[in-house]
Image 1: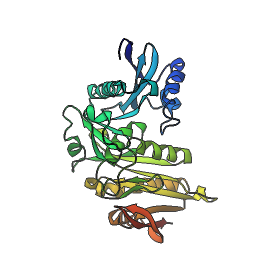
Image 2: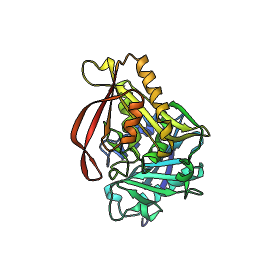
Image 3: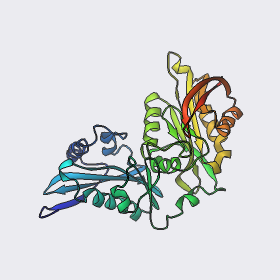
Image 4: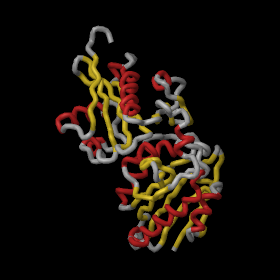
Length: 330
């Protein structure tokens, strides 16, 4: 960086009001918008369950780059790297690499054993230079100390499970779950969440935020299946949100997915969602499954859903067009 003075400063959420505008202005030089509401998160809206740190790089006092990291407050195991940017005038100086490495180390020092991030697939990026490898599509992974086989431990069969309402502290663990080669091809029809076995992932970190914001804004609810021994080890999740149209107060859209090792627990989290929907007065529940997802269809049928229609060829699974099956539970 020649004779210029480079510094990296860590900002932990919540961030002082005077600093928020400065940091948002920096991020918006590269991202016109993001899947995470910067203002809400910088105010500390999720800080009780999700630790978020921004590592901001400055040259001669001017902000030129950023890398953010997020992990659960309680017993963190997984972190996600977000919002890695360098302003155009300061690129190709190693700033993104330096800031990302600092962000990763914050999480590893806090106890995280693996880091995930998402970026568009290219031949080579700064992330490979600091130990990340591409799993599939936009999803990249880097193990921390003792984390080489983290997923083998995290999703090992036989763990005691608990169903609870989803919190923002689950964000990193959901990114980890959705990076696994799950049997159900379609995890969330409306938000396009698919297993890496079905298609190359287009997102990584934003899988959680897309679903959580959609559910919250619609007045729905979301639950996580977690290990009883690790509060933010997510093994599956389910959501219900009001359906479209004039009957929205009486209808709901239901989505569920589980790791293959915990397919037997799908009924427990699905019944939790169905019970809540009944309390809200939703007389009709609707679900969509890919015709190739026989296991997921069985989960819904066991819960009283029946096929009512098919949408021919609307899904692309393993590079071929397949039907979406529409299921109803009245």
